[in-house]
Image (cartoon, rainbow, N blue to C red; front, side, top):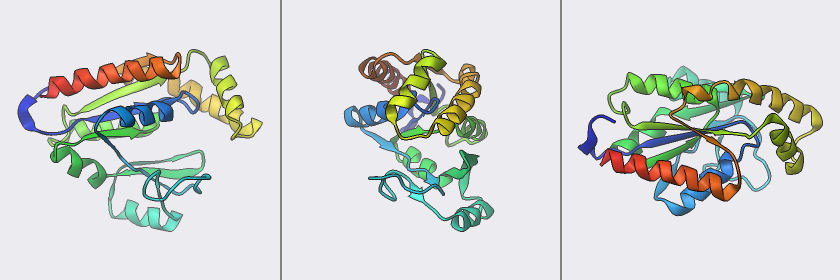
Length: 200
């Protein structure tokens, strides 16, 4: 990493297919380290227990499109028929203030942010990407079935998406093959500590 003593934070991006355990890992990391989670925006409906401004910024499609026109997003995409996006200021302001950030995002979004960051002096060298790889599609299918939140059609669709997402892991700085929740969290914690130490 360049520019060691800048006092800037590091943005940790975690991706992986639905059911890979990335949300559990992110929650675990937040519980152990002083990381600020970036709240992304979406047009999908809140799930039970989700809080606006904490889990996501829940926007109407019209609001989202207005923000797109104003170039407010670092990246946005349509995933599972809804818009998702990461606002530029949600990343830049905390990074410049020295805050380490965590972003749980799909492979499309991670790729866009990495590309934009490489051309942005404020972010260059301050992004670390981690891919959570399911041990197999069979295991992923079992996890999605066990979750019980999606219909069979939805699971089938998510597995198709997962297959193409797994092909993108070569573009990440690190890949963790998912084992147990605790092993996955330990692996991410080790990467986190090493990368933060390198920035100092």
